[in-house]
Image 1 (cartoon, rainbow, N blue to C red):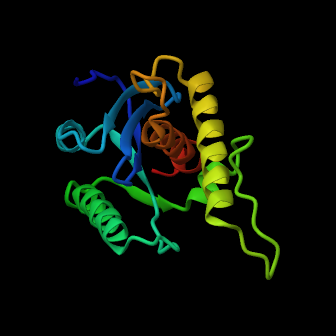
Image 2: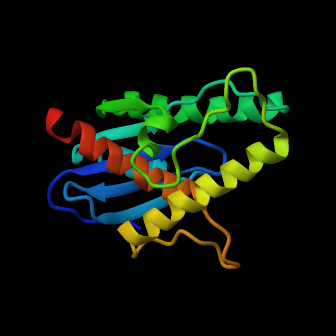
Length: 176
């Protein structure tokens, strides 16, 4: 599971509980994806800290999530990733989801008009469509990455992490 690379790599992290950590080259080529529940991602950071040009982590914020325990778990996961990167002294930037998703057709978040609220079902439908658009984009961009589960379900943490890594590479690549 350890990639031998010549040159620097860029890492993207989707810190959600179903998230992932993705590694791409300076040219944007796919190297590796680690699911959030795998220890290999943490180990990759530790072992390869000298070749990592930048880690880009999706910033987290409070949402209208009915489950405080889910939000607490998400924030713990975010803090763990952020702490590991800081401890390893790897350059890091935080990015809002709307910023890294902006360039992906079909993924841009459409906002409700002022004073208008969406139902939970409508929000879930929009989220599903956004995740599908991101996965389609990632499948075209990195055909060697496994982005679907054994039954065809989207492993959205993986496609998100790849897009986050690429966003960091494109927007901050020459600044390190």
